[in-house]
Length: 84
Image 1 (cartoon, one colour):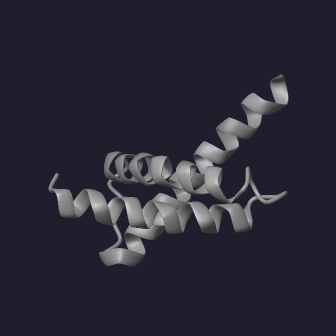
Image 2 (cartoon, one colour):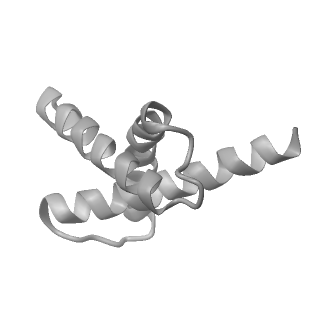
């Protein structure tokens, strides 16, 4: 992975985290944490879509994959928070 690809993935993750925070019931975990979870979600979504052999082209496909990953991470973190 090149430095350029990592920077693009970070930017896509920030956008996906922001979108996931808008969609998530209750607004997620605040803007900063949603952005952080979005970046983690971009890596998770990219990996998951590759494993499932799902591909969309271009930047929109990357945002969709990152958005799905961010929602998965938000769901997991939300479940962990509820158990406390």
